[in-house]
Length: 449
Ligand SMILES: Nc1ncnc2c1ncn2[C@@H]1O[C@H](COP(=O)(O)OP(=O)(O)OP(=O)(O)O)[C@@H](O)[C@H]1O
Image 1 (tube, rainbow, N blue to C red):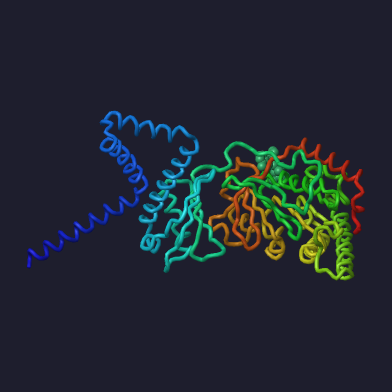
Image 2: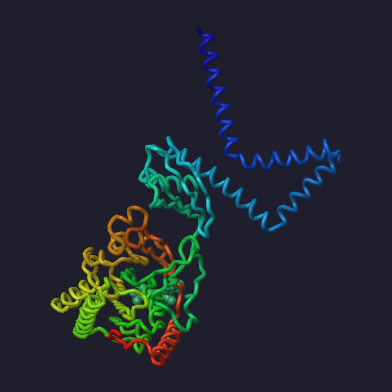
């Protein structure tokens, strides 16, 4: 009996060792294959080619040098080895988390290198969910010894997720100039290049049929973002600009391009919004006459772009009645303006519920949280719950101006840095836009064609 149990213990130990060895070979399969190919080439030369050990060794060595010297093959080899290393480390990181993820480790389908680290495409095993992965994300980051990891669901498949492994600051110290800087004319219906995301790709925003809310602490980069959007809008002479500049400086360069420019005066702001609402009513009448449901590109009905900086100065104005009137008009434009071609872009440095109640925020299709002081402030802009899921603008490095989370309704926040624009560039662009608008036979500003 004793002998039998001893041999079964020995068997199970040797089985386990064999299994571990197999697993290790599988983890290092690429490196082992490369080693086997090198050894095979050496053996072929030595035994079949009868080159002798030195000459065979030199031939194989030279071939390796050539492979490493050619940039294409070097890059390919480097990518393959890097991807194999990341797979191995990720697999180990999954092993050392508690719960379902370590019991049923996700299958690693693909590794893609980005400027901030890597993105792993994973297939979740049956019985697990994205929540299991999100709950262990911090531990996985610790196991991988990286800055952070972020989990994103593939909207087309419940069992497919992307795990962003963030190794370094994607935005570095370099700033990037706005690609529209030297454009002479734009088409506002085209997506606007707005910044670079944490994977190094340019992010575009299409504003027709969408409104945008921007929030963040002072100095976060809201005005620079507004300038980028205004560059795209002002250089398209068909766009009618309604500017509300509570600070009287940030939007000033665009003043001459605007159909309406309002400063701090709440009464004038209300009058302007009332005029725009009347315009919207006329536009709806026109859509009815044309028997179309909404403004589309090329129909001759110009888009109206409303830019408000700073929202709090109007909606939290000491004259409560006037502030309420302004809020009601704004809400109406947001709720009904989409089909009529009215786009609202509003920025605030006070991302709090008294300035942006959720009922107002939810009317904005795009929300952009620049660096915020608290998680609550970040959620006020993006929507409640995003901060606890790892998308908090409070964690953005204050030294990194222009970095923020952009959320498109129904999507997942994207971390990006806006393109930079300097004040003197803005003045030059605004002058160009003014000349374009005044030499152009485009639509009569402020009225439908
Ligand atoms: N993408 C960027 N790259 C580099 N620097 C930037 C970027 N965006 C903004 N900055 C710089 O950050 C500073 C503050 O930017 P900005 O004035 O746009 O902030 P703000 O959020 O509008 O501040 P406030 O709320 O006080 O008006 C400026 O010096 C600007 O040049």
